[in-house]
Length: 492
Image (cartoon, rainbow, N blue to C red; front, side):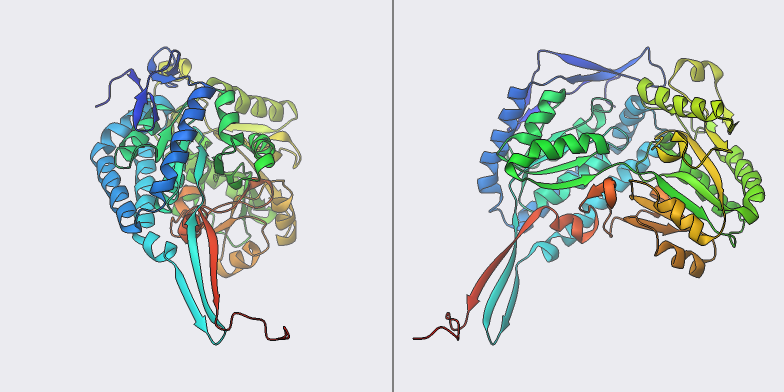
């Protein structure tokens, strides 16, 4: 098991780099406890990491795909062996229950294995030949990738970038969030150990490090998961050198409950509750606003609260009875509470859900008891803003067209869900503006790493997961060999 106060370090060109300053990462369940320490690297450290990756790219991009896959598969086995310790560390620094941390590791490994199994077929050169000649379609590595990852799912949202980037022949510098830097650093360390020096580098730090990673001319691609506001700054920083980008950003995902949804279906109702409150609501693709056909609204609310009260148990993440832990950090907890307070002040009804298992722990940590908000206006902040916490508004709609209008009335378009008769739900789903729409399920429960994931509108650019997630880290290179070599209409 990792030490209770583990200290992680930067990895540059295969070596651990000591820093002059470190930042403590508190345990959000017990804020008086320190989960560990992460370095505060400098902009100069970021430059060194980028230079190392740039140098390594020249040789790494020439390595056969079979060797790249073999190295990644060895890293997967190392992570599997350490999974129990990684899960405990993640729970301690993040606040997510142990089962949730284990689930994140599972998703990460599933994607890495999919990437290894499919990389050779997806990334190999394609030859096309006809009467006009031959064409080779090659998928070349892009170069140095800067990866910047968030705190809510630090492992899966890092490996979603690392695996395809390295398999495609790129090199990488990764910067994790200071709000969950420990477990992901250990995982990056395990992966980096299986690759040549400089192929995978790790830096921590403040805004100046992020600026370097997004503006340095040696960086060819940026892979970022996080807030839409931050993404706008990243795009500006990258503009001078026209960098390739994959951006997975914010979402305010709508769940539409149609008039033919069975409110007495306990399993379906439980899936919906989980899609709202898993990881204390701190998931980009979680259902953040529920629209219910007015004809079943009252029944739905009653059954929803009943299902929520059965599943939600708030407390210490290491308590096996707990389903929801604390919010990751004080700032986020205060923001979510401010949305709830605003809704209350405007006349909405706030209903607390579930049970608090240990009141002493609850009072000391960054806990919020999950709530449902009834009677909010369609334009209230708790409806139109991404809460990213354990609260959800439920609002009525009048007919399918109204529901579609409400769902699409957002700057975001990451995921959505439609609940009801399958055929009816599919027809409504086709009209939703989102990267993914799920039927009778939502959030992580409907995630499949075999298929591309990403958003529309201000929820992002590009796709991750699936074969598209592998190709996102390549440049398409056409090698054309015309049979005659001359255009037929050019005179001799």
